[in-house]
Image (cartoon, rainbow, N blue to C red):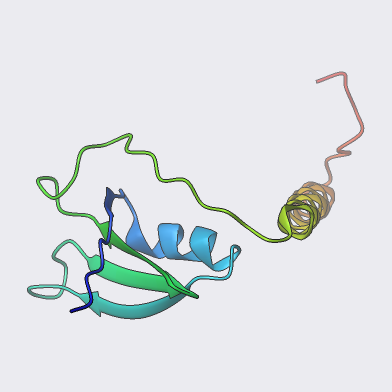
Length: 107
């Protein structure tokens, strides 16, 4: 007999949570909603690890912790730093497009 324990994590936005876990190598297996517009219940997996992400208020306590071991955390951090740098540059370009100098500290 095989037994698997799968943590259920309460999330406010399942799509955003899935994007976050994808950076760690997880992929979305399934998504279930009772009806369109209802809270999502999502299964994600990476290797032998699986998590359930639920937008349902009664499914899990907020602020639950789950420990994950990542083989190359440096690569994960480097990717996130690059994403943030790209976002900063996008915002600077947006400001310049509106005639605002992003380096102007006067105000």
